[in-house]
Image (cartoon, rainbow, N blue to C red; front, side):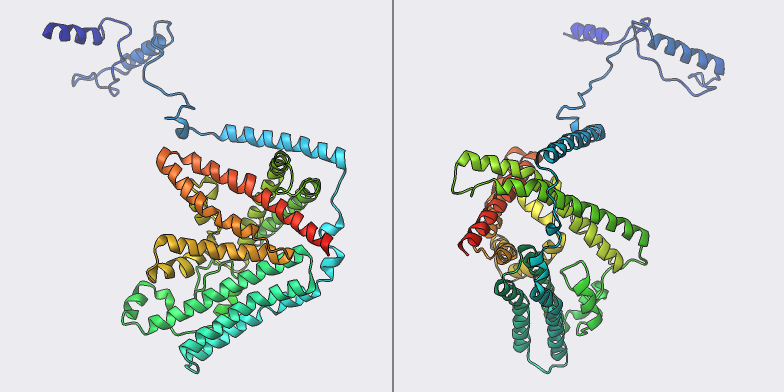
Length: 475
């Protein structure tokens, strides 16, 4: 047994006289490896000999274990910038051909009515409503001032805040429905009204919590850890005005600030905002509108035809949604933050890499996510509710406001947007299960792209469009 092991060892050991033996390490110049001094020309001769041998046919080519660059063990260790550039070039070529084909077939479909319609210009009640929305923050500030000076009791403060916040959302709803406004004008007004409502809720909740903290026995410890709280009883009109225009939904007295405004950078972002807004308009008028007008109600016709319309609509809808995200969350919010010297500009995270649906919701809209965590999720947990129930309440509130933002301007209450948001809850469970089962980061990400962007949004667009058209026919 010993002899066989010795034989194996000899077989594995290189022959000292073989030209294929491993090259010995080169000693430092002047060192002969035995404590003496070796001449530099001897070392140079050794390097030259090794270089000559490495070019010979008998030199070994395969010396260590290596993986293919696209194998599962090495794919994430490589740079794929070239493949990304290829995808961009192919995307430009394919879409360029489609644009030329569309223009040759239909001509230029964009009309001035897309930007300015006579009905939109007649929507002066909505303009007046939008201009008068600041009266509600003023009412909230007056309520807080009276509470600061103890002119009214705490229950009355809460009741007044409830009245002010509810009026800020019901007033625009009434105006839109009463005057039968254009869909785009109504959507814009509801969008601003929901932002004002969210800010007023944060303002009232934060000031209430500050009053509670001012009476706490731990207020000194809290102030030592959070010196930015300043006086817990102080109410500032200036801070409220800044908060109402700042790109955030969470109220606080002081925000991280930058030192200056980069005017050239702002102009550059505005130019990009105009370009991408025009691109959205082109895609909507040139692609989405013709597809929708040539479609049927997806729930009242041939199933295969409905699937074909949804898939055909999915690509331009996805482009518009990505442009909308880039225009609003990156360009507009950063422009606003730069003009206001607002420092915290984490308006989104890398949601495109989300492994599960709930991860996507935590990363794609950070202002709303932070508001939900601060004013809905954490208060539910503090009141003893389980995490699952708190999550359900947060999604329920989000679903309500998605429905209001779409259904009120369309004046169609079919709850498609509400159902679409609530459907995210089983998708969260499904993607979490698949993530834990397969330990694969791509499964949940692909499900998100499939259900949310490829199927969900086109289906909602078709549903609301045909319901609006049916309503107009009935009228």
